[in-house]
Image (cartoon, rainbow, N blue to C red; front, side, top):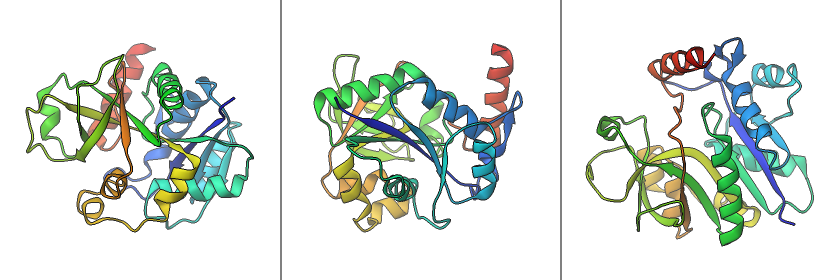
Amino acid sequence: MTKTIILIPSRLAATRLPNKPLLKVNGISIINLVYQKAKSSKIGDVFVATGDEEIFEEVTKKGGKCILTDKDHQTGTDRIFEAYQKLNIKNIDYIINLQGDEPMIDIEDIKNLNSNTIKNKSEVATLACKIKDKNILNKSNIVKVITDEKISKENMSRANTFSREASFNYSANIYHHIGIYMYKASTLEKFVNLKQSKNEIEQRLEQLRAIDNNIEINVILANSSPIGVDTEEDFLELKKIMNYKN
């Protein structure tokens, strides 16, 4: 049976929204909201990976699992690889990197990513959803992905590129990228040992390192369009939605 673990990289030093993981909605921090979603998927063990004692304490005081890493990693993927090595859990086939600013991600989408990645034996896979609001194209904090083919519930496609820009505004195969990746364990190790590419540095998108080194990323269609928390505006929108749900 294929074995998957979920690792959630988290740090306090976000430039656009300082201390983001510790901000609370209805008394629960963003990092613990993400942790709860990952646990609820029942895919495998879940750990937060962080270089910050404050995040470690926030997760563990609620009964969550957290592992301390080096504080100065360049990317979240570098952080989860260190955590994966430190955990030293045997016979792991896949690692899911669920970004710590996706508290609204749908549990069924996490499950769908896991099952489809395993079924297709993908090296790397991620989620994306349809763009319903064209204004998203002009928001640089929302990452877009262009795929080779149209994606649907029945059909995944290879990512052609990822971008924050909207120079390709009305491409038929442009989608709103969601902050989650699933790596074969061997591919994760290969990825973190590659040098950061020029495109990755310029766009501040680590997934471009994979594409620039001919590592295929399969894109799977998500059912929902979650709000990633990247700015104060995103946080206020998240609070509004979750208060409404309650």
